Length: 123
Image (cartoon, rainbow, N blue to C red):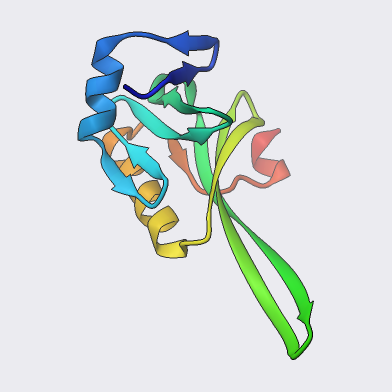
């Protein structure tokens, strides 16, 4: 059985494990009916929707130089916000998977705001 951790520590609730097994999978992120799951340290992090105010995707690009030229690597972070502060994110190299995960969050948790809010919107 997978080891789950939440916002405030370890989770042993069998209902969370069952939801994890039935959740939609998007690369390393799973979106269930009550929350989001993703690998974090040596466990599976479970973030309940009731704890998330906003979710958005941040794109990080890294310019790499190699022996034979240059390459650009992109990483997509599914960022979670509460009380105007980013508190955790899930990372992937698969843009479509992160877009689809964000869409699943919007479907399963209409109370969660989707998309980046600029500083003027958070004030």
